[in-house]
Image 1 (cartoon, rainbow, N blue to C red):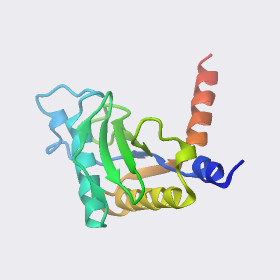
Image 2 (cartoon, helix red, strand yellow; image 1 turned 90 degrees about the vertical axis):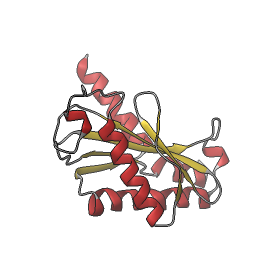
Image 3 (cartoon, rainbow, N blue to C red; image 1 turned 30 degrees about the horizontal axis):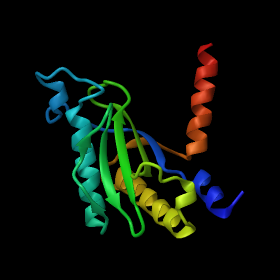
Image 4 (cartoon, rainbow, N blue to C red; image 1 turned 180 degrees about the vertical axis):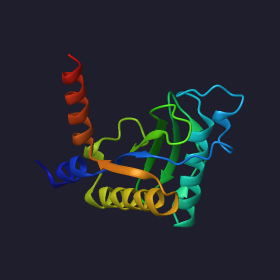
Length: 161
């Protein structure tokens, strides 16, 4: 296994956490029916994350709606990453979220990333963790690698059988 392959698979770029939302300011708890696929609270949370990353010197776009999530482009030195955020449940005050990062361009795989690109990616993930825990005060943060997420998914599928 090449060094870049080892770095790629060990990169912990996926986060699960519980956010503290104020029901009085969360539009999804008002007259609008909450939805996992079009949630204003998710967009607002990603806007806050983007603003915090920009304050740390990262170049980010504005959040956009994807299929079942919102995403934010982050330009690093050699490539662009997508930071995706989706709401996992519809709890009104303490919902669970999944945030993950991946190369933005289609077809950009681990073979296209050199060790310095992967290090930039890791530093962004460290910044995301700091923003989530220290600035936004999320609870129960868990950080996983791609391989760990896949293993968890296989375990959950096996448990349902």
